[in-house]
Image (cartoon, rainbow, N blue to C red; front, top):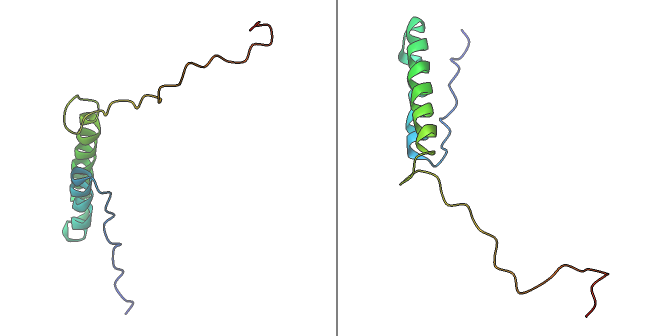
Length: 83
């Protein structure tokens, strides 16, 4: 009899809500095959919700866009400019 194949360990992303959603995939082994679609739909919805929250202001929302460091008074080289 062949050995049972072990599912891979869940991937940890470092984002708690994403990790929780992906952890549900590890539970598939104990779920009847005809119920797998429901598990996948739940994971998909959790990931969509998490991704949508990144567009909202506040904690977990968009981060401010980094601004370039201020430059000293510097004009680009202009060969026609007279000093």
